[in-house]
Image (cartoon, rainbow, N blue to C red; front, side, top):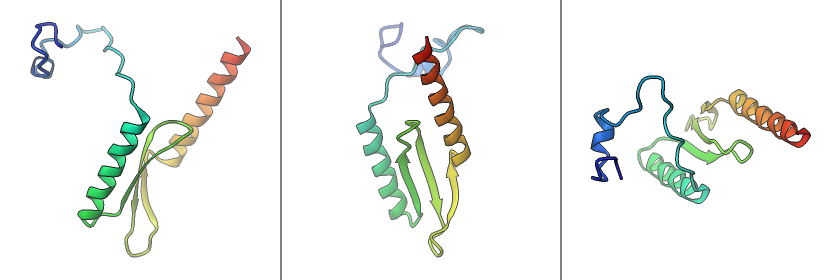
Amino acid sequence: MNSDGSGSKAAVADGKNAPAKGQSLPPPAPIDIADLARAAERLQRLAREASRNLEFHIDEASGRTVITVINQATQEIVRQIPAEEVLALARSISAFSALLDAEA
């Protein structure tokens, strides 16, 4: 519910309830992995129906959604979003953070 009590997202969209300059946005709501997986499956099904060869999955190590574009003729990966290098970096940062927490 918005501060005006309406429960509408319109007030947020028009910027009236946006944080003042220099203030942080509120933290995002936690995401349920099962809901995210179901959404990815629906998007994948829609992509197949539209003759697009896209794959959606969750990178288990980072928890990030990964979209892979595949050439239908060669089955070669054309593009991955985020790139594998970005996922590897996220995994490294996560591992380093866990190491720091363990030492604290």
